Length: 382
Image (cartoon, rainbow, N blue to C red; front, side, top):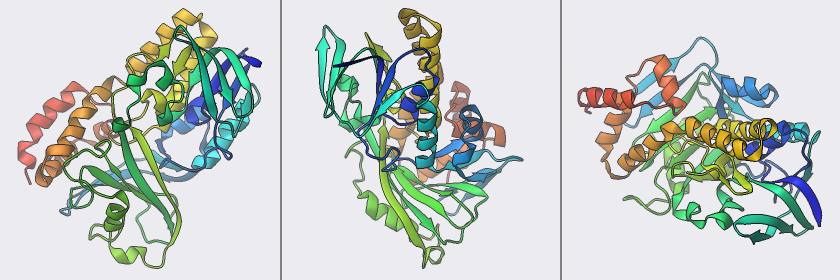
């Protein structure tokens, strides 16, 4: 049985970010995929500060100076900035960059599935893969929505009905306005969700949709693939723009609906990234949160003893996601509201100025935002 100081399960953005930044520890990263970053389950869109913080400029596909909010009744609101604020990344290339960096400090094993976990009084003692048995003092669950370790530590945090789903095409040879990231709303396009077009170049884009109601719940049961095809052929995006294009890729993804974990650690195990609900369940943005959660845990363990590291990291999780508690309110609204009410809400949000709208897009809600919504909602009745 091999022994490490720390074992990380999951070689996504969170796990690799942790492995890159941890110091003076023997670390093993385990992942079940043969090729890391494949299959893709992310639109890989993020903000400018992510590129700077984590030196990911080499993974950029396209940069954009703004975004648009588009409703299915023809309403369009543009938000344009002096410098690029949104980026699409080559997700697989980003993972390769992170992997190359972490291999200077840590070992990595893939493909290797965790087949058995040995527990003792609430602590993980060892894990067994198809390759070997591994023992460690500390374990990190960075396995995303699978929550490989977490579901053994606290099964109440692992509920399939808390997962929400999305699908996406990546297409080329299309005619589009690559200046903007576009967000589309309305039940005529996607009931209980929203659609997007994220440019990856001047004639290519990722076109997808997300259903914001978890599981099979909701009042309007739909097949996501049918809804995506309907969106592509809708009047909002003219069908001729997609004639004779090449579909490069078709992929789906899931993310967690519920609020972040009350505890981000369980005795000798920490939880980071999507496994700790470190993504916006409203718009799905998770790369920034995953990278930062991995780095912050590494900083905590580099700087403090284990007990204080737990306090530091939990405080980070609480501060980083304090705005997330509002999201279920929006999602329940999408579940029960008629189309005119959803369009009214989105139009009211679009009344924000450029600075505040970018803050909202980053999921940084404040209580004052809800007061403003109550004020602007009536005059945005559609």
